[in-house]
Image 1: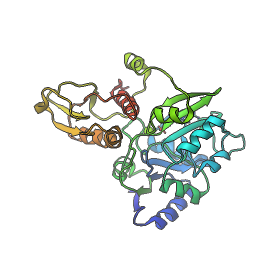
Image 2 (image 1 turned 135 degrees about the horizontal axis):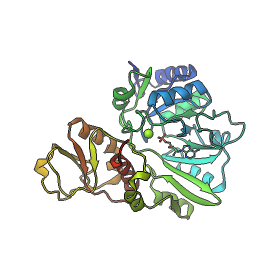
Image 3 (image 1 turned 90 degrees about the horizontal axis):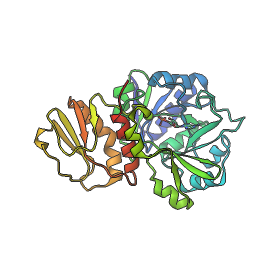
Image 4 (image 1 turned 180 degrees about the vertical axis):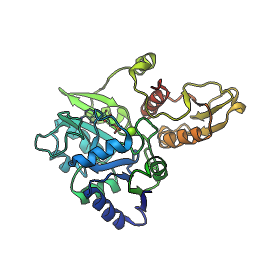
Length: 324
Ligand code: AMP
Ligand code: MG
């Protein structure tokens, strides 16, 4: 079973044990403001292989490389002016930039799935300090079995991966609760590769430019086969619920009128006040709790598509997508 270290009670021990574990090429459970990461040395092929094996993740799916600050990131990737402006505005924070990789970067091709670009993020707080102490970038996907609900607490990590890793650092619940927003700048245009914990409007405000979406959310719903199933609980997932049926757990946002609520196996409120950041922070934990009730289906009431709602709805559509 993995050793747990509380980083608030024992920050120095956490840094020392974590850097020693990473130096051995072993992945660790690492708290960040978005979700908990399964982090390993991005320059060590054996370490990166262990990330893919521990998660059961397909190797064509590249990993985000985490840096301590912009200066460190500039040693590994080439920044265009718009990407640099975004980095200066939002790092440390829940924004990943996809950038051309420097040829001599030392980041192993396994981390980037052989691409000539790299996804880079500077996380807030302890994770950034650990990277500074370690001196090398950390490749880190979310600390959960591939395709399952992301981990937002040390207990989530230990329930899922505790038998397969040696160290989990504990910083309580992740404050943002959904993964980073991923942006790629190409020919002076900003493309949104994944909505996430930084609202698209914030990115547009700072740059004065529109973010281009890959495809409209509605098109994605009409063509569910286009979307890989991800973030999947054991239960089925039903969206835009206006009523609840027997055998269903209900996850609500705000105070909607839901018919048949007395039928629900459980009712969980993402944010009674209708606050999207609060809902994002609760999302994955509530999905796990609803799943643990044994309900056949988890029904979600409508969640607006603005601000962090764009990231929440992206995760919910994938959770509801047909599974293999
Ligand atoms: P995850 O670790 O599951 O949050 O996923 C990280 C995601 O980052 C991947 O699924 C990709 O969509 C994206 N990503 C990472 N690196 C790159 C890259 N070099 N080019 C495009 N997307 C990337
Ligand atoms: Mg993930």
